[in-house]
Image (tube, rainbow, N blue to C red):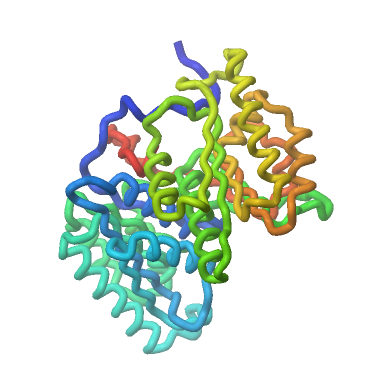
Amino acid sequence: MARSGIGIRTAQDRSERIVGQIHVYDGAGKGKSQAALGVVLRSIGLGIGTPRQTRVLLLRFLKGPGRTYDEDAAIEALQRAFPHLIDQVRTGRAEFFGPDNISRFDRQEAQRGWDIAKGAIASGLYSVIVLDELNPVLDLGLLPLDDIIQTLKCKPDHLEVITTGRGTPSALLEIVDLHSEMRPHHHNNRGQTIEGIEIYTGEGKGKSTSALGKALQAIGRGISQDKSHRVLIMQWLKGGAGYTEDAAIAAMQQSYPSLVDHHRCGRDAIVWRGQQQELDYVEAERGWEIARAAIASGLYKTIILDELNPTVDLELLPEEPIIQSFLRKPRDTEIIITGRCKNPPAYFDLASTHSEMICHKHYAEKGIDLKRGVDF
């Protein structure tokens, strides 16, 4: 019998996909580079203690020295924690430019970055290569698209490649296995927006991974300021064991044991609308009490409320106490909320950032098994 509802399935009984995939995160909304770094963290966590540790190359186009970017702090936290696993290369000039003022230097820098990427792909030494802002580089015509397509088609089977940025050429989208668009939403809320509340929702990939990127960002900013920026990760609807977020979070806790707190609640089962059990309400409320106290305390720089949206959509928690807690949050506390929902809660109107992840393409549609660390 077909069912409709919202729920999260545990990862324990799913088989792994052994062939590396090509991912694209694009669109005008926030979360693209964050999602890429979240996948990196998950992959590193899964590789810890295995014969072949995950090695990562972060190749960042259009992001030359002299300018600071949001993800710089997250990368700093990764490099501090795993210095032997993370390589980073930045190319391009520090300022924005468009198709009308492309210089010879821009083409040279783009080619320099791609030559490094080609060598890294051919070497077989890396498990994950992030080509950050490759999409707009191709859209601007700074690199030969045919060369990129052919190189990616011939990549090692084990290698995950992630490209980010707006303006992905259609020829690249034809060969990728996953395409998530980050679409921004703006709410007509009469000036009630609260800075520091971000929401990531939608059917596409990138919600929880973007949140993990935000956690890294908070830790990295604390390092750069010689401060301790604590992070709380609160997860609903994720009872049991076997989630690959656990590996990512464990990797952060191992490297920054005093900075990352993690709590989870819920049954080890999918919660269907109309079939909620008493324990679902109890567990949801238990999680909210932890989150509410953490928000009020002011002890945390970033609080991730993972899968809060479907929890509220399933009516396991009332909206009003959540709204009131958000309205009273300390100014310096960031709240990151994730999860899909059919009926957007009223607190969406408070968010300063709301990105909806639109799924345009997913390798599961081809009958390929989902991969631990990337999909669940």
